[in-house]
Image (cartoon, helix red, strand yellow):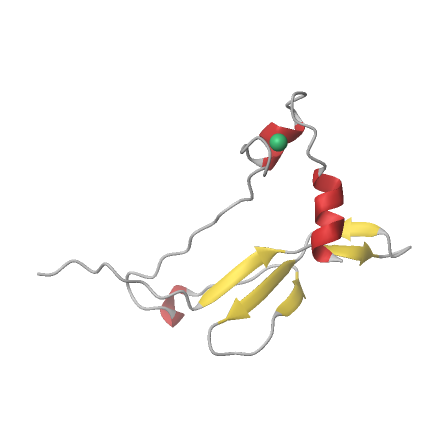
Length: 98
Ligand SMILES: [Zn+2]
């Protein structure tokens, strides 16, 4: 039997915080943004998402990827606690999700 080697990405969720959170429109609130293949646009502002197994064929994979620092290459929490790297993640969040 041939192994399955090809997977098509049909859906993607990104942790895209709302940087204009209440009450003063300056609070960074964790949210998800969803993009689906074949649908135009992005659905923003989701608190959570539900992926019911019955809606997906056997073999579907859910991959979670976190960003790595463009300067030191480490994941966010490791970079933040590393004094030798001064990449500004707070600025990056505001610049990326404004
Ligand atoms: Zn870094």
